[in-house]
Image 1 (tube, rainbow, N blue to C red):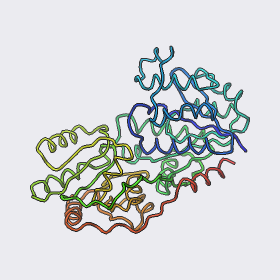
Image 2 (cartoon, rainbow, N blue to C red):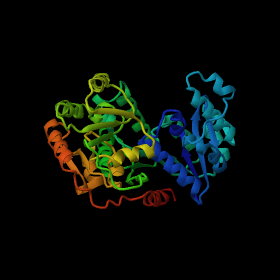
Image 3 (cartoon, one colour):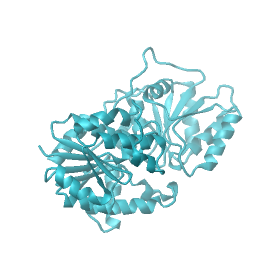
Image 4 (cartoon, rainbow, N blue to C red):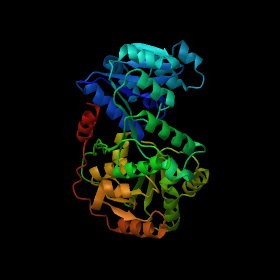
Length: 398
């Protein structure tokens, strides 16, 4: 079977930053799958000053640290000299160097891989990290066969007003490098593939696009009978950034707060970027005693408990590449009120209620109705698991 090389640079860069994001979870799913597969596999990460290469045994040693189930060890001399890294990343990078069977400086990537990977190996990068032109060139020079990248969305290009300064330009450059260096691009939805095709056409580039919907590990539902709270509780889940449209929900709760039976809004997710005005509004609402609660990022068990109490998940985003919160809620039979986005139709069909992302009145009416009459739980929702995803990937890498 063809040997595989999975780039885990994103996972290494995320250590110490809290619960996993959607992209983090995808990369972790690939790590699990590559470790469990019969095919030989190695794992590559860009570290301070260079690269480290792990085999399956080394990855097994590092895996608890990547999952946040074990604390990283002591920093080595390279980590101590890497002042741009946080304490947790310094220790984790030292752990990876100790667990690795080969290391190199940046310029030595191609020779290192040529020495240790069989010719024709498959290189896979699903994390939107380490996709520079020199990396793709090194893979070709090292003798890689299939060179596969995953594209999770094109939001920085579609909605540049919601991105950090400079991100749209960097994203466009990464997409160009990837289209030139990869032999195929995996898209997590047909909507992402359509948007990717649009931008590749704009850039006068071509690349094979493969739609492979992601799996989703269901949250473990809390034991006991379903909970119906009074007052009613609603949950919005995701990083607090402009495209997630939390401002609409604060507009709605400004109007609901004066009512004696006002429902509660529970905001789950870390604070993001370009959103200082929203953060000020949120702080003011909480200080004023409005029924608005901020929980930060929650681990899976706490998140499942919060969703189990909710009348509905609220998902008013302007743009999404996929939609893990929607899938997780439906898997728990929690009703969903969401924006009328093509990707949500692709994922959920008639299982959810669609609302305009720019209409506070429509959301107010739907939330008020759900507060007084609990929405009917959606029909049994069988979402494809990771097995079907990796069956497709196995064929692509063969």
